[in-house]
Image 1 (cartoon, rainbow, N blue to C red):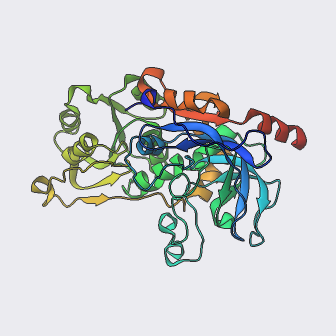
Image 2 (tube, helix red, strand yellow):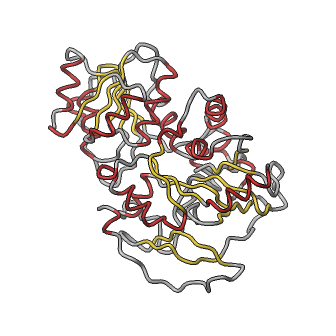
Amino acid sequence: MTTAEFKPATTTAVTQGTAASMKALVYHGPGKCAWEDKLRPTIMDPGDAIVRITTSTICGTDLHILKGDLPAVTDGRILGHEGIGVVEHVGSGVSEFHVGDRVIISCVTACLKCDFCRKGMYSHCQHGGWILGNIIDGTQAEYVRIPHADGSLYRFPPGGDEEAFVMLSDILPTGFECGVLNGQVKPGDTVAIVGAGPVGLAVLVTAQFYSPAAIFMIDLDEKRLAVAKTFGATTLINSADGQAAAHVMELTDGAGVDVAIEAVGIPATFAICQAIIAAGGHIANVGVHGKPVELHMESLWDRNISLTTRLVDTVTTPMLLKIVSSGKLQPGKLVTHRFAMNDIMKAYDTFGNAAKEGALKVVLVNAELRRSFHEKAG
């Protein structure tokens, strides 16, 4: 399914122009979403912050939701889990952020107090985790409520580029933690990344922190493969012929790769990873899977491999924030299309037809608010 197949949804809307209303992208079941009026969020708990969105983006996970792959997302939910914004209100329990602060919104909400948070496993926070645009309203709106704000927001650096730093909401820590760290990439490794979409490219740029000897990028889209080459891929493999695994094995003299990273979330790409992993290697799953996959234990039982899954914990976001601030990592180069927030339906259509449109990351901008903030700062 592509977003071109989405059906407009009819709902009871809040009266336009009232002080308590806002615009938001609302999910109404598989294949149905609408940019419509909703009530603005309000402080519900002492740890909450209300953030007015200046920049957001669309994630591949949002497309999975719209395909019906995540049944926990119910009719009426505002989508989105990435964004930059300005704090409008804070609850009495928020100590690290104040009204007027510019912030980066983490895709994962962390209370910092539960057992999982104390282990650094914020994705499974007992009072948060991945809830934005999932089980509570998300960031593809004019305003969003952020629970546990002290553990779920980051200060936006002075003079920073919003298009670069919005990538810290999700895809950079996701690619790094779920792909590179779980894959245990190390100097001299041969790495294969299956899927050259935005998160696969985030794996690519962060894998180079550890100086692998070779990085194979596998995808169906020649345009995305060409982009991967500019980001540091050493070998490009188009999998359209169904022979990607055979090509990898030929290039590695039959040995396979030390690390295979799945960055799509479909059975075919997971199968490629199993077919190309070397003895003693690591398969790291990053993609969101909506259907079962086959695990070929008849081939892998004696191969001494490891297989990891993970939902991003965002524990590396502070480190990645420093690297992006230094200019040594420039994730803003992943942005190919820009839309006004009110044009979000067009943005979804572009992102959902990425191969045709040549789309990687699609940015949504509240241009008026961003301009107003810069004028005040100046």
